[in-house]
Image 1: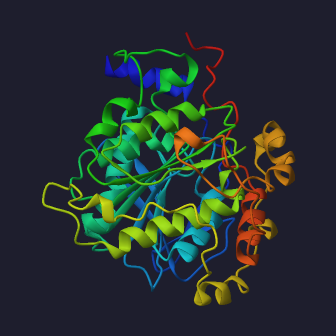
Image 2: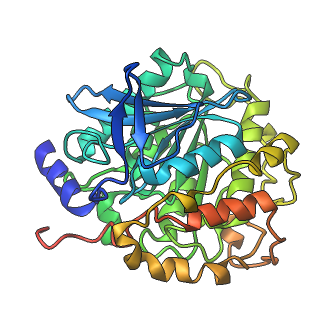
Length: 379
């Protein structure tokens, strides 16, 4: 039964970039480095052995000002080479350490993509954070984008003292992306809708209202089922692969990180929030002042546009990036789900650092727009 499920996952969900966007080289010191991306002193390149026998590639980005660590599971049709600059920018803007990894069969990771392999992949990444970098469970934030919401939620259900969870364009389940089923079947994959009630930490859900790959209803329903809800970010006009282009994306994330940094003692041994009302809910204010240290460093960071080669499937995503300018004028105020289509005001002009952040994301593709459509061999 498990083999059938994994087979379905391979047919319906996984599109690793071919060829990979980066290579691996071993230096004389034995240290690994990625080719095709800039070498940075604060980045470690690692190979992690999973319990299923695969070696997955990971990058750890250290921020000297960080007290929290983000474990990022990326979306479909992307690998570490394409996510590398985005990871660096998130680490800088959010003031977090960040570990990102490639799933089995993605990039230079060995093995083949499957649902069960992704669960083993994220476990190896989490174990690396704890054993190699000394991270504590209560100081780790899990971040799952699209397909990455599957392994992310699975791990989150088994970490009672997890600090927080971010779900970016998440799926309720693999089958529900393609068909409007109302129940869970044994052959479904990534049954997130059944797992989300067992997560005991604050959850931020981010989803575009115009997502034509994973409908907005997925994010809304998962948010409704959360035990500890944080004000969601419903990006008006946002699609599946372009949410990072909107100024409110990074601003909302910064407010979320700031909120959970300020309340480290709210958690009990069971992992529940004892005073959830103290968690800030007014996260729709986009007038947050930029951090001076971050703004100073933004000027010196080279753009990914200078060294990132376009993805093979870029032409398939032109329709989502071509209308970026139109969507840059998207609304700034993000309301609760029951007010998502009303009282939305025009946005302020993005800060220079955020403008640059959007330009960097715009230069790469982070998802295959057809990533959840069955292949020709699927049944």
